[in-house]
Amino acid sequence: MYRSLDPAKIIATLAELETRIGQRFPGSGLSRVCGEVVALAQQTSKRIVAVSKPIWGVRLSLLTLLAVVLALAALLALEASSLKTSDDLSEMMQGVDAGVNLLIVLGGAAYFLASLEARWKRDRALKALHELRSIIHVIDMHQLTKDPSMLGQLRTASSPDRPMTPFELIRYLDYCSELLSLTAKCAALYAEKLSDPVVVETVGAIELLTSDLSNKIWQKITIVEALPGDHVPHAPAHAERTNTT
Image 1 (cartoon, rainbow, N blue to C red):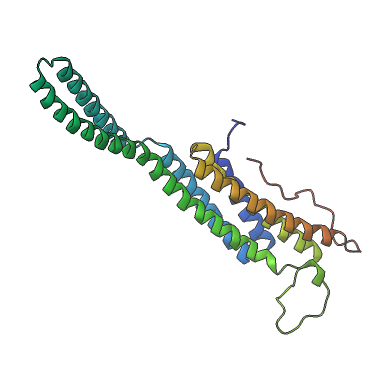
Image 2 (image 1 turned 30 degrees about the vertical axis):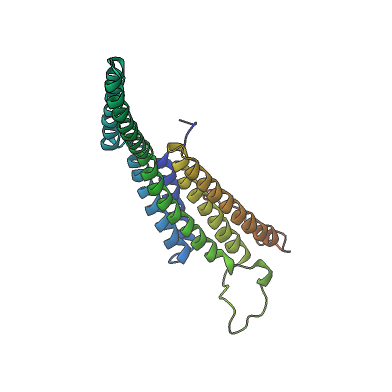
């Protein structure tokens, strides 16, 4: 159970994170974004099951086509072994030429069917991964204006609203980092179920994106923690905890 990701535990962890964000920042946009990630994780769990199942129609069509190709090749070999005269040879050469052309066409069709299932699954996975990548950028948008260097500074008329205390800012940024990481775990589910190199590469790019964004967030957290004063209260006995997946 510890050698692969469990979609159910990822969903449960996201749902708990949504509750925590809602309790700390009720009605916030980040809470609603987390709700969207929960919905995407639930969809991902169902899509993973569907995309990992074999497409039997394509596989049966491929087997039928291969049987036809083998039967045709056997027929050509049988006809060639029964040649007796030069007239037969001339007729047979014409037949072989037509048969070879037919084998080439059937072989191309077999190759198309052999790759069709993988291409269908890849297309479905890439569309789902695009949704996850898009919401990752939405998460990042919610932390862009959370600039720790502006804490306690005078605002202009165009400055973004920053009503948070240093402690609240740390919690908000930490929630963003957690949400990015869990979204990347949803993407990683596709790499576990599909060995398609394009899907694996896309998942790797998403994980690298979330890692880079989280590093920037933790740079902000480090700046806030370095501010003078006791701005981080001691955690209460019922401190927030998130289950690990």
